[in-house]
Image (tube, rainbow, N blue to C red; front, side, top):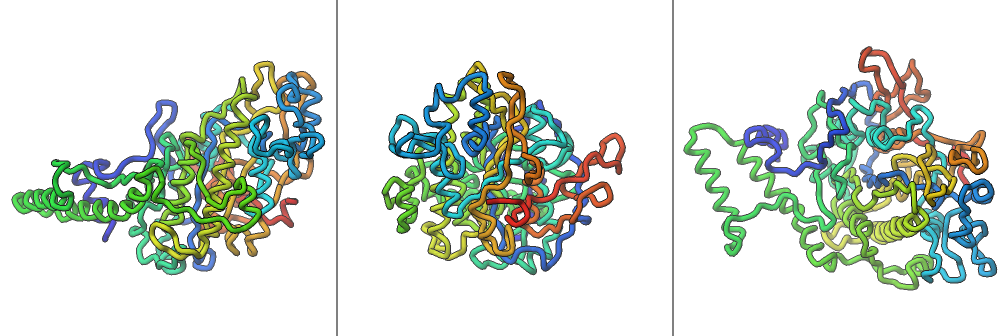
Length: 551
């Protein structure tokens, strides 16, 4: 079906009446967006990936403390902090060991005391799941995503920098929309040289079903539009809920009647109106047909989730390490938490629909603004996040080249990448309110995507690594204590996350990004002086462990 006709049809029937929107507008944000010069982007037939990646973007609104993923400086932090961590977390200075009940995992994550990994007394802050994901090659951690170009610690500026992938926080489009524009403007390259993960050829990018999706992320700015480019309507982002309820279903006038008959009656009314008008409204009919096509495509997901996921058969675990990490159980089950339900929906959609290229998650992943009482809230929420991520990665692992339970696809899943980050990091001083104020250094967690050629030539060498080393800075007993990259450590800006995603889809960034070689997708101009750069842009993340110092 021709999606271009659908665009015209929407105009004829009033635009957004057919499809849901992905975000609500907020008065704190400006809505005008700057144009991107997509023709200046270096992307070629040989650089686009043979199988399209699928990205799940997890944004931790509020900005979490880095400590769950980085206790490498905890002794120095404890010695200088206003409030003592050991008053609340016995063993936080010690490595996991039965004798000491230490909480620090071998890679410096905040784990549980190993003498009782499943007891309620002290289960840490997700560090055991982090260590498992790292050890099994499912995840890498970058401890030095550091804001230096714009050191503002306001939520607004930090969220927009991250979600737009640019210092132009007021006018740049969101990086999800830039990705949509990139694919749309270079459709011939993708149609001729790539396939979906199930081997389906891409005859027309406009025929992709739900390529850009938001799940419980109503306030995301990732899909802010670039008014200078027209993309297929479905590239603008579609919102679904955690049960993957069908966003294209239509309420029938008589709920007790036969749904098929009612659908046919509605379509007949439209046809009659068109015939009687004496005008050509074929685009409207095309829109109605497309709505039904999309409803059918989503119907299988809706059914599988109708009973709280009972219809979704997750794989059975067979590897000993996976079973041990799953509490000795072979049955894989997502946590019955808001975070678990969102993650289950995102991973299921990505696995069962290879045409879903980018999904952003929010909602329950927010609430990390722990200025006070962080000692009570933070560890549990980190456990919730990484328990869900562990199940997600095992879900992805066991369906690699195995038949999927809903659509029966046999496809690789090593093209699925999950990125996890937030507004910013936080200071490491535990303040007198038992929380942490804003800071500029944070962890970046990236999972999956070990397919050769995607992250690096080999793929797997980029995973199971910790990159970046930190030091504590600030005066003893003062609030302004934080970590920053150690001298000589690898580091990158938050905008590099967006740049990295463009790389996965085939963008060749300048070898050196500067005023003479700006990056067209992440650079920003002075709105008062067009043509004058405020920032030449940010390079993609260096994922080669021989170059980023990862261990």
